[in-house]
Picture 1: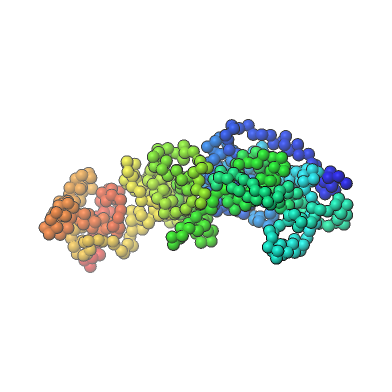
Picture 2 (picture 1 turned 30 degrees about the vertical axis):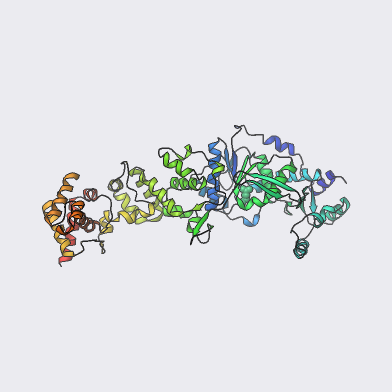
Length: 554
Ligand code: GLU
């Protein structure tokens, strides 16, 4: 029996015409430097921070080089499949504005000329290549049962030898054609293994775009390429896919680094040119002064839903992802405030090999900065979108008082140094609630500072509304009136004046304006008080002050 006969015996209804596929998926017509890369998750229904980060980097690398970024679903492990597992992933990518050029666009649909982009639909392709390998004597059937494999493992453990199907332990590699034919005739189940040409004593060097050259012992394990259900293993499938889809760069998590010798060997055995590899380190988190991996279990920010719930703008998340992707980005962005993320070129050499640190506070800072440069209308639209999902009551107020809200968001915005107080949309309500009577009416706690005696406060408010307050005053007039008010009551008109001569005054104008601020909003820190008064309008200002006075006199 020849290898060809063996191939026909094992896969009788499968063609071994690999040329058919080589022609069907021709080389891509792209620039030499163009990066073709992919995001290749199992259909688990969601993306977590680590894989969102990887797909962000993949998208960026492809975009920067006018390449292709595609989504391939790796579902050869039927156990890991979940219902609607593909749509969940597509949704998560979509929510972060990570668009694909090719690949799955729904549970069943796809775009692109190099599909199918879901491995379970590529069974015939894999089997064709498996048959081709058998014909060349590079793959063979293995009839070892789970029990036998386990037995071998125990022996290897006892002998303190490497675990795996290699060398003298690769029993089925030595079966004769007749023995194989006999077993197949008897209906013995089998899988297909590839015949590793490697020797563990040989050292090979593999280049990783992030880690540089890595030295490994050559692979000598005859790994499984086709399982008993006729589906390929991940290792084999990805080699075929990346070859036929003309992937130039495999960018993925570093849990795959140790498989590199095997993967590269498979590419070479198949006669394919291996892609370039870049293995991303896991995102780290600092806790009690120590670095550890960002954990799906412990860290809420590891779930991508976190960003949606908090209302952190997608653009800010992307800026942050770029910050942790390339160590030189932050400096570039600081120096090029007017430029866009697209203007920055991703560089594999600037990726931290030891794992970037994830810092939520830094993300909030980036987000704060980002939101501060938006137009008030944009803040309104995004906030409303967020509130529609997470705070229906607030959404109603936003709709009811649209223009008023926009005016509120416009305080100290659209100026050279805009006010930076909204870190995310879920935090805005807690910063502006006092602008709505509906939310302010039941206020109980006032954050008074230096002047906290209710009687004294009432006296200040009374004097202010009766003598100094006029809705029509421009800011300058208002400000000079505040000084007059301070002076009337024995407070210095200027802070400096007070500091130079503290015994001559009860305090300074800032103490007085603090009273006016807190009695109006209950808060000791707010945006510009003059602007707030303007927006609330005299009726409400007077009402709020009178309410305070009355409340404290009774
Ligand atoms: N399906 C593999 C995973 O989910 C993909 C690994 C790769 O990108 O090659 O990790």
